[in-house]
Every structure is written in structure tokens, then in C-alpha cells.
Image 1 (cartoon, rainbow, N blue to C red):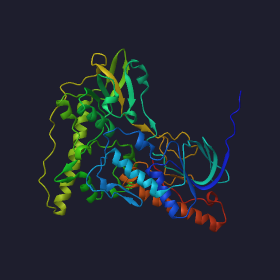
Image 2: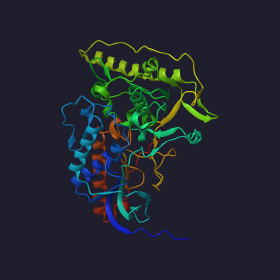
Image 3: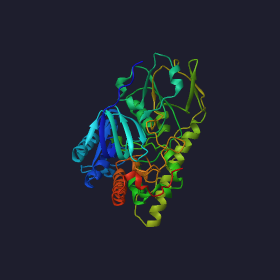
Image 4: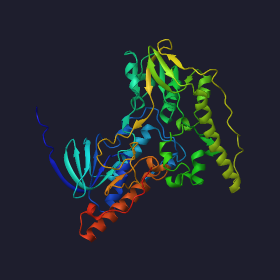
Length: 439
């Protein structure tokens, strides 16, 4: 049996940052300004997920003015528009050039382990590093989720994850089953529907929101109401909000609602969640009506909260359209779908991602695979997370809030290093303040 060759020793660094998306490069921006030596490791290439895991007609679902990466706010001609994929990549490429991070691309981190004498050992595909501090900025969307029963689908059916979908033209002729109605699933179903494909959509319990209400984008109203500055500790669901599915809406063609009921009127076939597959039949939960009602209830509740704000503030605004009224209701709840009889030749799994943190060998997880932390600072001294949804606020996983979070972590890292130097200790020997654990 051949022994695995030892990885070359690449040396020691004060800080290693894992991931070169908007979070990792934002971290590098602040570390450079603090004069803290560091290295960013990226498994693929900088901004890989934006370049390689978005469909051709992808657009932002929040207005361009919310793009506020450090030193790089949106400066284009349409602050209330929605950048398309090409424009997003241009925005991010310019940001990457501006940051000019110390970056090693094509290096996968395989294991991170705390060392007994402080700091961390980081084993990668390109060698071994040690570091005083590590910032995990790889995000929470690393491993595409596909159910095990997908293995039992007929071999002739093309199966893609939403991260692999580009356009309707890449799919063989025939109907398309989209599984999942979160942000990606709803928008991909719309993309296929507008391209003239026959679409079957297995819905989930994702909520939805209006694009515009009373003359303004809903995001503009919610920003005025302070929603995007609300810390997770003050949210009614507290840390539970991190488990919520994103609301579906679109920025396509200037922005509009996504109304699955209207799609059904136009020929899209809707079902409850997909549960299993056997003997040619996809088994479905009989909850389509409940899923649609839930999405509409959230839609109406958000609009009603805006109406209340307008009234309390005495704002002059366009007349309220009132509550949304369903334009279609399911005549029955179908519990099976015969894929062959329906002519389904393609399945797109749009049920999300897992974080893929199996490479982190540190006692910082809460039992459900999510890191315990307060504003990204974990109970393990020197280990931080950045870029996760609701890490601190709604915008933490987005272009709007990651800069604030990265700046906060840079301050904590600088303080820890200064305290260590004052005590004459290595950074991890200095200990850390108590951390409030995320439940």
C-alpha cells in the first residue's frame, strides 16, 4: 500500500482567509487597511460561483443601490434597476482588481484543525500552512443538495442542479420538472416558462414578496423602515431566521412579482413538494394549496406593514392596491406524477445547498451543521465566519451587508493581536472574550 506523500510546508501566516467571493475579498480589503499580513485561499477562482453557477438570464433581486462592497459602491446609471449576470460580473471583477488581494487560486482547503499551542493547522491541496487566525468566508452554499431518490429516476432523464442550469436551450426537448420554489426554483421555472417550455413545478413552503408597492420598490420601503439594519438578536425569530427560505421575486425586465398562480393559469402545472420516486411515479405531498396560501399571506403581511409605516409617518404615497387575491386555486391535490406520461425529460433540482463544513475539525457547530458564533466570532479563539445569511443582519450574506461584517471582524482580529503582543503571547494563548453562542 502506497503511503500518501506528506504535503509541503508552506509556512506560517497571521491570518488565512478561506474563499475569494465577495466575503473573502471584503475581508482582505479590511485586513490590508489594518496592515495585517494574510493570504486568501480559493478552491476555484475568485468569484467562481457568480461566474459559473448562475443561469444566463440571472439578475439581482435587490436594487443595485444595495451593492455596497468596501470601497466599491454601485456607481452605474440605474441605482433602482437590477444588474444582469454580465453587469454583476463586471461589478465584481472591478472590485477584485481594486482589492488586489494576496490570493492563491486553485487551492482547496481539506482540513482545518486547532493546534494545542495555539493557532491552526490548515491542510490544503497545495500544502500545509499554519495560521494564528482563520476566517471562513466560503459561504453557506457549497454542496448542491440532491435527494437520494434521484438515483432511481429513469436513466434517460437529464438531471441538473439549479447551479448547473444555464438556459432552456441546454435541455433536451420535452417537459421540465423543477423541484423547489425558492428564489432559484421560482426564477428558473419562470425562465423556462417564458422560453415556451412545458414546466411542472413541485413547490415548497417558500414565501414571496411584492416587487413594487405603492409606487416604490418594496426593498426601498423596508430600508426606510430599518429592517435591513435589524440585528439577528432583535429579529422575532432570533437565530431561527437563518433557517428561513428566501422570498421569491425577480429583477428581470425591470423587476416584477412572481405569481405562481398566474403561471398555472398560463399552463404551468403546480404540485406540492416532491417526496420520493418509485415505479415510474413521483410521490408528492398534498400541500400545494397550503404552500400558495402561505406565500400569499407573507406577501400581504409585508405590504400591510408598509401601509402601516406610511400611515404612521404621514407619507404621501400612491394608493394601496389592497390585499392580493388569488387568481387561481388548485382544483385538486395531486399526490403522484407519472413522469413518462407527462413527457418529462428533464429535472432541475432547486432545493438548495449544504454548507459543506466537514473539513473544519473544531468544536464550533451547533448540532445542525451551523457554526455557533456572535457576529462571526466563534467560541474557538481565532476562528471566524463571514458571508453567511443573517450572520449579523439581513444583508450579511449579500452585497449590502458583508462590508460591515468584514470590518467588524478585522477590528476583532486587530484587537486580539494587539492584546497578544501586549501580553507577550501568541494570539491564541491570549484567550478570548466570552462568545454568545448561536442556538
